[in-house]
Image (spheres, rainbow, N blue to C red):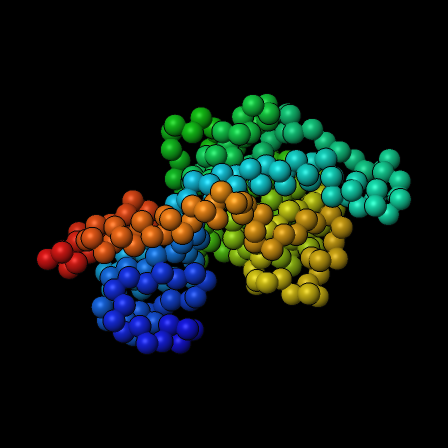
Length: 288
């Protein structure tokens, strides 16, 4: 049972990348909460947990958010300035005159998502004098950006940053149909979840020049297969789902996880509960 055996007495479960669905939850009849130490929690079936009045809590570690935000902008600039190609050419004693580099200033940067990491990215991009557009169903008025449809964002952006959650609705958000409408030479950065992009369609768009480059920290299947075609594309930057990791976050993650567990055991819900609609039921059954 995916390493979750012999936990029938568990009240709070800390789960890291171990799938936890209805079968696993039903094997833990006393379970009241599942804690992910990280921001991500897509290995936990949120709907199944809500049906069973089980709280799902993630690790809202600010150092983690900052790391992903900073790394996203680093990858954006790396693609614009073709740093990866220039560095490779230097090492191989190749000419660099044919490498075309571009300013960030004046470019249209499309951001898919308006959550905490997207906000951090937007705040850090504004001084670069680029045009920022955002596509998301949630459109907070205090973000100070232009909200557009996803279709408009894909068609009009010079760079597209994916910073949204993976759900059944957002899986393959970027697919062959969307890639057929992109501005020629667009670049993609995905530091959110691999399933947001149809990788086969992206490879086709990279090969025919519609997409000039991509920086991917996440993939549909992880770890990325050793023979995956993305590995052979010189206009793609690949990192193994770790680009935002930093020493400061490493120290904060276990502390925040422990604080969340303590809060739950005391009978309260942490602010980072991902299914707050169950709050009244949870409090009644936990404290009643």
